[in-house]
Image (tube, rainbow, N blue to C red; front, side, top):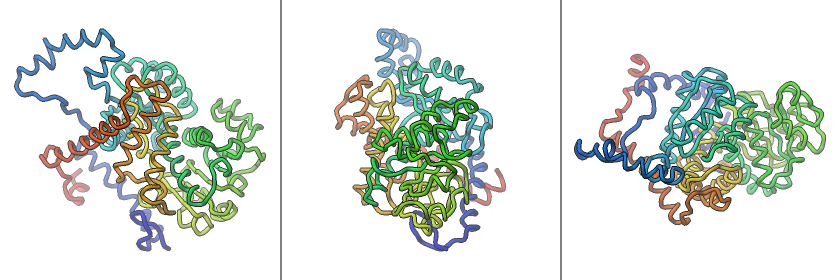
Amino acid sequence: MEIYSEGVYMKKMTVDELLKKAEKPSKMAPPMHKFYLGKVQVIPRCPVRSLADFSIWYTPGVAAVCRKVKENPDLLSFEYTSRWNYVAVVSDCTRVLGLGDIGPEAGMPVMEGKALLFKYLGGVDAFPLCIKTKDPDEIIKFLKLIEPTFGGINLEDIAKPKCFYILEKAREELNIPVWHDDQQGTATVVLAGVLNALKLVGKKLSEVKITLIGAGAANIKCADVLELAGAKPGNIVFVDSKGILHAGRKDILEKEKNPWKWKWAAKSNAEGKMGGIPEALENADVCIAASRPGPGIIKKEWISKMADDAIVFAMANPVPEIWPWEAKEAGARIIGTGRSDFPNQVNNSLGFPAIFRGVLDVRAKTVTDEMCVAAANALAKHAEEKGLSEDYIIPTMDDWEVYPKEAVACALKSIEQGVARIKPSRQELWERAVKIISDARKSLDALVKAGIIKPPPPEEELLSTY
């Protein structure tokens, strides 16, 4: 069968060959992590020309800086310390990837990986903070306690429905941007992909019927952002493990105690559809699946009952809910997944590094869903300028120039919404973002070239030794 390899149709692979390829990162990851003893470190920002410099960077000179910041902590802490570029990656590790509640120690590799992406793609200094509490109010208290150190907070891998509550309360009570990547990050990139896919098929967001398979944090925020961008709530249909959401699903409030999900049960599905995935997909223009790994979660015959020129995003990892070639054979015109070895990877890493770059560069007091829409439009526009096709509806992480574009869009939206502490010009924002992001990449290259970061040993030695 013909399948994707490196982003285009290149060669034939069997499902077994594809699965073997997919398993290789998991095979290599443990020895590579052990070899490097983690993925991020702290290095100085300032020079040390001699030991005398410590009298400036530390005592006694630093006391004068402390007195200065005390005059106006909200403003000057961003000018005299690295707070302007610090983000905390905070998780209670109750929903880590597809692994579930694995504990803070086991979740640390994921949060370190997030910090690496923050730095390499957005030039952001991110600190992984895996915490030993599952209580949502304690988590909010923790966020408030660390607020003076950071310019923003990225929440990660927190189970629903408390993730909704934590995000809402933290955004209300903190004076820095708080973002939940599983919600807002996913929604941003999904919106960008949907906007460009609709351009290719000649349909309008305000008119299409959208089916969301899975009603967790990602898809609920996807619906919020799609609505904000112009989709009609009544044209959206959700499916969870019990079936289609509708106003009669009292279990959502009574058993799940999930008002965020209930909001969509009450206002979606204007046609009153009942049943499960097959019924929800009938005549749908767009399918967005963020449920559980496949294959076989979505069947070919269900895709065949979608509208003409159907758009299918099957985003489960490591295996999508339906293989892309199966969706194509069933009549879908445009397909996206969460994987890098297929075209149209819907990847949160296209969103959060640049969005935080933007809000940090204006010292924003919050991050809003409108900023997600602005970022999605920047992503979509960049891909459109490069040339849209059915196999290229969204940028890839190799398109590094999209990150400063996205950062500027979010920064300008922060200024427009009145939540920016400073108001640089568009040109100033662009130059700053380009410099910070390119400097981050150059720094890593310099460390590798200097031998401070060593190359890994050969694969056979790595696997046998580590």
